[in-house]
Length: 149
Image 1 (cartoon, rainbow, N blue to C red):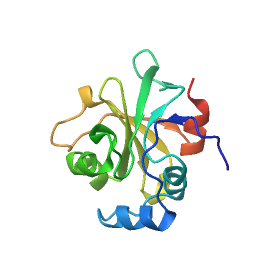
Image 2: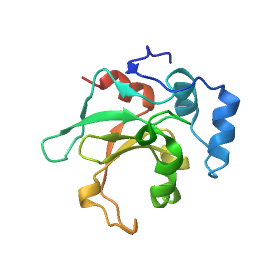
Image 3: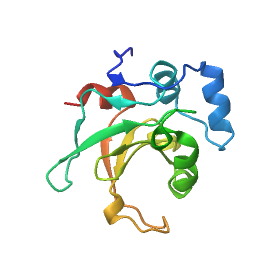
Image 4: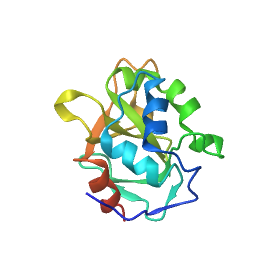
């Protein structure tokens, strides 16, 4: 499914092969939705930011950054972020951006829910990554982006 690019200040343009090669370096088989979206908007800040999170506090948070590959803004770049949050990747959730609370938005690489979007509340997560508080947000990345308000 095609989606317009609702992201401002994108990073350098990369090919799909470059993106796949980059994630393979972290032993990640990136979902097709994420790869295709990064080929269009390699990191940046969404124009619409409010996301709905069912059964979580007030049910919303603000999605403020989509990480990119070799993005000029370090806090928007995958490299350091993937190293810092490797324990989530091991559990099958690849962070792809952050909320203004510092919490993470992730895409699943697990076979049973591949490509689905989750919100990890960092304030409620175990710092060792052994126990996480995550909430389902969307069926896929395109539906997540479309649902932002």
